[in-house]
Length: 404
Image (tube, rainbow, N blue to C red):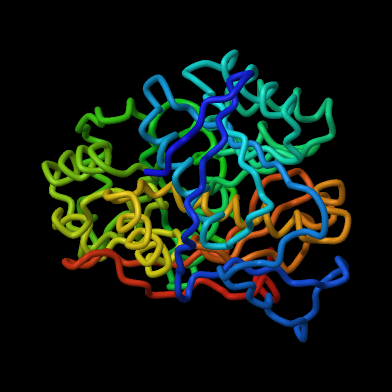
């Protein structure tokens, strides 16, 4: 792990080693279009490889990294810090200085950490982690006119100089429902956890099914990890008098143990995955997919796994352990930050750079930002197999013609 030096005001500056790690094949790209509407003949983003970048003509560029180093999220925070540092090493930008501060375990400490890096001269802030912390800390960045790349899937945290690196549930729901409808499915059901995430997924599901000419036959909310069997659910997975199943697909936007609890409940009611397709989101990607026979053949939307696996191998060879999935977002955020620093006008012109309609391509594939600071991604569709997820529809390599 890269050593850190403790300095005044709670800001930590990495003591960089001289070596630069090469990450073959991994790029973050930005198209240098005019910023107007794209057409069918518009070029794909031109890659900027993770090779050394020429330093800025004068002075050091300071980037703040505000992540939890203490509290329950400390392990994830350390992985995000590591990934950000790894990107900087891969880019070979000796004039870039990281100002790192501990966001701690509360919104108040995240605000203090953000104040520290801004007071030390950060021209852009990467972090913090979580909607509550991003919302609280954003005010400090906005007051100074400094852009922030935050880590949250809550769209209300974005806007006015704050850009989110997370995958929005709405875009995943829209992608998987559209793909299922394109495959001829018209009758949908949904099993959705209670809470804010379930609320967002439920609204997006209803909208996507309607937009694709389908019908929501049944929608049920439950406490995560505690879906209870019922006569309604039994009828949902039982053939009718005509021998047809009542629905073509059941949408379950949870992963991990919560997904396994749902499939176990459905199994007890006679669910057969060969007759009804399970649909999901990128929450599934962190699950032990393939070991549960009921998820076999299920479809979900998310980034294609090949780029992340290359990144994960590179990260593990550097730090000794496998990174969590979210670490890729920190790598992309740092690479994007350096890209912004290199444009004419630097961070002061970041709004123009971040508004590129052609977007960027990083570890998690193609992405761009809407005017409100929320991200859009080019998502793949994956099918669960006994050996893990298999891409059945590749992620796009351009936003042209994608209907975004």
